[in-house]
View 1 (cartoon, rainbow, N blue to C red):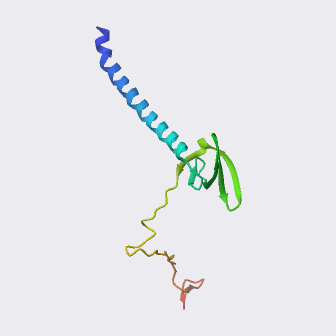
View 2: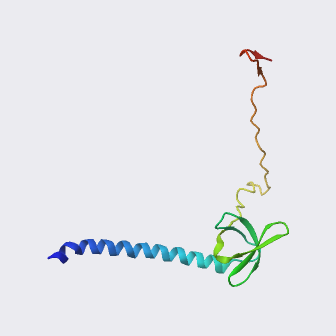
View 3: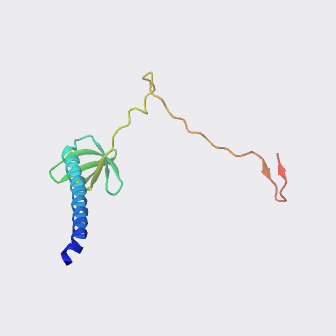
Length: 120
């Protein structure tokens, strides 16, 4: 009789554990696929937030250029993801490249005197 009471609970817990492990397995496989597909010249993010370019790859390590002429060695496990170049926003419909200009915000040029009156 006690088994009949706990059977639905066991089924729900078993289903939750199955789907949780399945999601974790997919994430792990995606990370393994990323590490296997890394190539020299790829731009990557590390787990610490560093952006760099891959200059060399071994079985367990990658050499990352973090600044021109500055190359550091990292474990492959530290690579979080590849930086994908966004080519759609860089070109207009006619194929020409566009440059974005910064917009400067300015305040009024009036100066306020110490007694609260505005001078121009």
